[in-house]
Amino acid sequence: MHPDRGVWLTWAGHAKGGRAISDKPHALVIGGSVGGLLAASLLRQAGWEATVFERTVGDLTGRGAGLGLSAQLLEIMDRIGARFEPSAGVAHLSQVWMKRDGSIAFDLHRPTVGSSWARVYRPLRDAVPAGIYRQGMTLRRVEQDTGSVTALFEDGTRVAADLLVAADGVFSTVRRQLMPETEPRYASYVAWRGIVEEQDVPRETVAGIGGRIVFCFPPGELLLTMAVPGPGEDMRPGRRRIYFIWYRPAGAEALDDLFTDEDGTNHGISIPPPLIRPALVAAMKADARERLPTVAADIVERVPQPLLQAITDMESARMVHGRVAVMGDAAFVARPHSIGGVSKAALDAQCLADTLEALGDTGAALARFETEQLEFGRRLVAHSRYLGAFLEHGADAPPADPERIIRDYGAPNLLLDVDPARFQARMH
Image: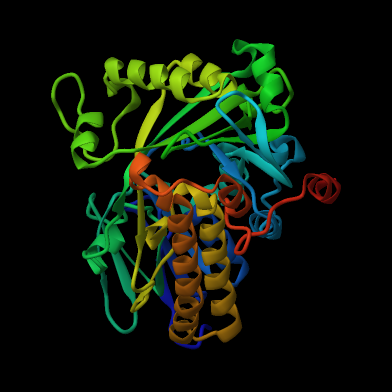
């Protein structure tokens, strides 16, 4: 029996159905995306029971786009039996600065492996038993005392356990209840994103990208483009897609305009892609031809439906509140330049499970988890702010140092790149 608890009634059936008795400690994981799945699997390995509550219904593989892989993320996936297939990775052998005329001004040999969010999510989802994954469960609030924590859901369900893990993302219900002062902060620039089929762009454009991540630095801006998985997560040349993300400054007035649809409705800092005004998309594509090398402009112009997001970051002063642990994007949001959101969630989940298993005492384990992961989260956010600082004031900012930014892009001092050759050898 767990040292700081008795036998708890744990939820095991329909949302309003029966209960079963277990002598294992029980964790409620709020959020069924990557972070929550990692937390549930790792806690189960550490001797806990875990139940995952996800508010949406259906398959989540349509979320997300491309992402970078870290060695730590792959090791944690291996540990829980969520094998990442070698065919799911696209090798990038270098990172280059391509100037407006198409010439390469800087070429950094830095082998990395990229993939897609879906190819990470799917094996993690398969590793969690269907019986402990509950969809359509929207959290209303959390209650706790010295001996337990209770989750109250919109449908009236109440579930008590020893621990609650908040892995419910940047707009976390748990964080907003416990730390209402902590909210994402707008970084004064936005990102246009898009994906185009490799077969729909000129061959010379595909060749211009090659097996590289291409950086472009229009004055006060930054664009990255690279190959990513194709339909069905196909990684074969000719069947892949090409992805871009273009960071552009936008003050408060410009932000309001960008996120207002044709009917005059302002959507805040995010907008459904089909509601982006066509005139804004046309202007963005016209700017691409004027400001970007042909290789990048070809990709931007051919994207049928771009996405638009306001870039934000966030850091929490705490990650533990009684028997509640806050992790992943619910606690820290680094700007995309760190390429570390999924890896951060994996490391949070690993630290939480390992300290619970090593110490046995929940309170002591949560205190250690908070000490270790608070510092890591702060460093990751600080690094992402450093990489994006030149974008905050556009052309009025000091000129960017492209070589420095390319060398430091991602989080090489915090997260380990995956070497393509070693990745293939290890996975086979």
